[in-house]
Length: 459
Image 1 (cartoon, rainbow, N blue to C red):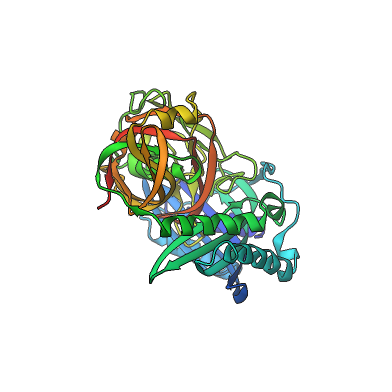
Image 2 (cartoon, rainbow, N blue to C red):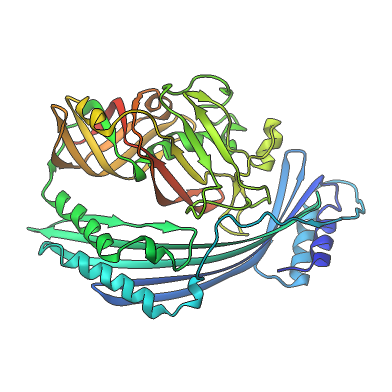
């Protein structure tokens, strides 16, 4: 992507005013979006992002800059500007780069950009037709296709030179059910670090029917009464609870500054002994998987919580300096325009030993959260609020009528103490996670779990 001589000169200039570490991050990314509404193509968009980000450290002080060009003059000027912002004496350093090949544990069979749009549109159209035909109450269906080809190069003053190519593909179907002027929405959005072979993993008709089934079910649902009760949260996207309510608080960007509910608690029991939580960037072809992070550190499988005990955090280089700890391969950024920081990859609660039927039958009256939605969390306090997109009342140990308008309200440090039953069937689901270093792909996941007591918002 960039010549070694250019990269070495940029690093030398960036270090010229006394920094003790310098990094060049180059990127070239192509992406495509195809959107259809009611089986007709609405929009096809192609985009290209190309540029370089340069960072320097002096102790725990960081200065960074970026330029939307791969031209040598622009890159060297950026390095000079970054160096000028760091006070220190001039120095001349010899940079020796050694290229490292970390391999690819996420093989792609067919690069999406090499395939004509027609096949992708036909797939989306088939999904949307199946969604529309599911029920007369389906008023509108939309589908989208996303493909991203993300190429990066990382070079550092420590001598590292590494490159990676990240291809991801995602399909989404959204249905709107309508009756008597009222609308409800259902959706499904599988994705992976794969190419066109993602088609082989998902029947388009099944995707369409799944989205419409949720929309129709919730259209006929009643409302739940608010209160404190036990809740069974289903696998897959149910893992967003741990991701948001606890995961962000385990990122070094919060922990290093003392802005986390779990700061200073390594080795202590922070969760129910039933809970083991993992962040694993090495899952083959996972949506959030990486070969190397955006600082060039190889991906790792990290056991964050083991049987309730906090074992480690997710750490990037800068916050690792602040904490006196090594990077865990957790540094990520949306693009060269953002400074990288500690972020999640594929984060999930590991399988337990409880049977799903035992979890449901243990609840006399409560909520079954089949499909979670979005929400918000304060990583300092751990306070969260999440919508339940598809929920059902549990009565006398049986899943009964659907209910709408439910939300889960609580505090991360408390909810993981209250997870007292953990099922065996782990599934993951895909999402985009936003934070200071931009929006990045992450997986969430878990088996079916029971939270013994949590506040359920409703009417």
